Length: 360
Image 1 (cartoon, helix red, strand yellow):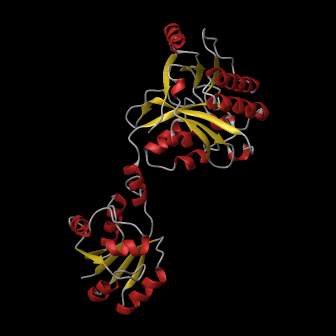
Image 2 (cartoon, helix red, strand yellow):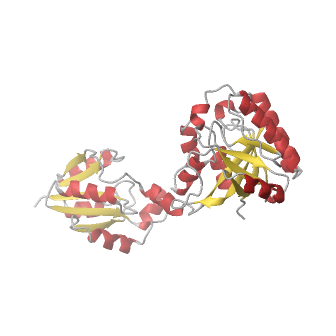
Image 3 (cartoon, one colour):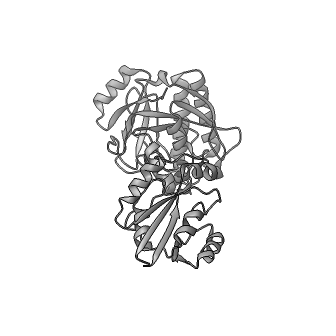
C-alpha cells in the first residue's frame, strides 16, 4: 500500500482543498491529511481558527478521499506534523507548487525514505478562493451606500493629487446589496467600489487598478458628508452627518452609461476643479446649501469644458453636475428645499430622490 501525506492549515475547507486532496490521493492508495492545530495557528500566524480542532477533524474525516486525519501540534514552523510523519512513515509527501518550506520537508522525507512530490497546478473546477478571501466575504456588509460627489473630482487620483486641495462627497441612500441594486449600472455613483466591498474584496485596490481614484471606497466605507484631503490615499479632513441635505438632492438618469476610466486621459481643468472643492468645503462647514451649490456649479463648468453635453435645466434647482467623471450615468441636482425638489420630481420622470446616509 502506497501512503500519501499532505499538510496545511485547511482553516476553512473549500473546493480547492478537496481538488488538491483528490489529486494527492491519486498518487497512492491511502491519504493522510494533517492540519495545523489552534495553538500552531496562533504561534505562527497570530490568528484563531475558524472552527475548533475537533470539528475541523470531523469534517475532514467525512471526505471520501481522506483515509486518516491528524492534528499537527509541533512548534517547528512549516513542519508542525513531524511527529506524526515519522510515526506513519508515508511513501509520498505531496505539496503544491507554492510550498514555502521545501527544504525542510525534503530533509524530513529523507529521514524516512519518502518522496517529495510537487503537484502541478491544474485548472480549478471552481473559482479559486482562499481562507482569507472567504473570511473577508463573510465579514463583508450585507448592504452599502453609493455616493454622489460634489466637487474636487480627479484630485483623489494619485497622479492628479494636489497638496492642500480637497474632494467633497456624500454617501447616499437607498442602499444597495448583492441582491438588490435599485439604480442603473455604470452610473457614476461609485457602484464598482460598493460591489467590491459587498463581495469582501479590497475596494481601494479595485478602484486604483482601474486607473481611477480612492474617493468612492473611502466615502462608501466612512459614510456621511465628507471632505477629504487630496493626496495618494484617503485622509479625512472633516465629516458631517449631512442632515442639512435631506430633501434637497435628486439624481437624473442621462440615458447612457458612465465610464470613468475612459475619461481619465482627458484634459481636466484642475484649477477650476480645485476651486470648486474649496467652495463646496466652505458650504459643508457652514451647512449652507447655496454655497455648496456654487461649488457644484463651478465643477459642472469644468465638466462642460471637457466636452460633456449640457444637462437639462430643471426649474427650482440650485445647481447640477454629472456624477463621477461624467459623460453619462447620473447627474446630481441640488434644490433649496424639499418642496422645490418635490415639484421637480413630479415634472421630470428621469429624476429620483436620494438622501444623505451616515452610519452611526
